[in-house]
Image (tube, rainbow, N blue to C red):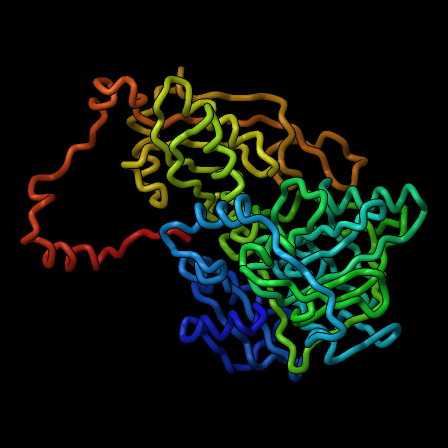
Length: 474
């Protein structure tokens, strides 16, 4: 069976919280998604009969591992292995698919009839944040995918925001030709495909959806769009088709982004003219809430962590990297690297490599040893407090390109719609001395409380620890 949103929801089983209360998706789904700690489905949407809405499908390490077919303990190494050693999978074009069960073309295509929520108070309107955006290079024919925000305020006219990356380059090529760019949104695909759609590395002969097929171990089925020259996932819940005309701009924003702020990229934006909508019967709108600590961050941080894990292991020929962790609560701007440094300067070079990756997000990189639980902020801050000498273990790099939504850095060019920001980056080495200086390294061996290895205390300790709970990766 093809991997789809519905197959994943079935795999979730009892972990999926089904809510049958009447809910207004436009004005109430935002807070439900922000507060939920579990995957959930809304079954009764006011004003949208026959529709359902789901979110928080990647709420914790358990559901993330399920989406990628991995174990919780080796999620990032497994993903890196599938991405960079196994590589992309195959795609085939099929004649029909579930995404075409209902067709609304031309004037019948009305995006406002989809239960798109308002994410945050103060937003410019309803925003699609869950669409896998599909464009094609007009010169090579190679597709690109990303997940970008789109403002729904008219039935067939949507301003949207692009960062200066691959799809923006596609649009520049169409503009140079004076031609409209075909663009489609695939909403409601298997979360594994959502995750890999956020890969930011170079890809000249394959696209991110095919990379997702490689990770999931299947052949991706695609269908031709009804109104534009693009191929889209056959098993998606919803496909929105349209064109983006050259040089046309409209105001877009403000929008409460993953940073927790609504300012950052509001301004003139390209406009997507909708030409068709197709969807499954009894469709499910896959929502991705764009407030703090939600799926929005995880969808980007997982492929970024796998990319960094693969990259950092190559520093000095081989570096012993145990984990790369980018929790949702750092909004993707901080990277924690768990490693065992062997040589002098190795941790420093690993951190510098983390700050110069294909992703623009990381501006702070922190290295800790294997004896520090990288998932526990208390452990990381303990290492920062006791293993960092600021005069030699902190590196500040000025005048670097920073993520366009990081408002802590100033905008460099107010005229550019994609936003350019320049600011500083910082590396913090909170590791022990390297293994070649074993005597110095032994000085930092952690003390253990008396009785720590007494097996007779296991049951008592379990009772005591259960009251406080335990910290796990999100």
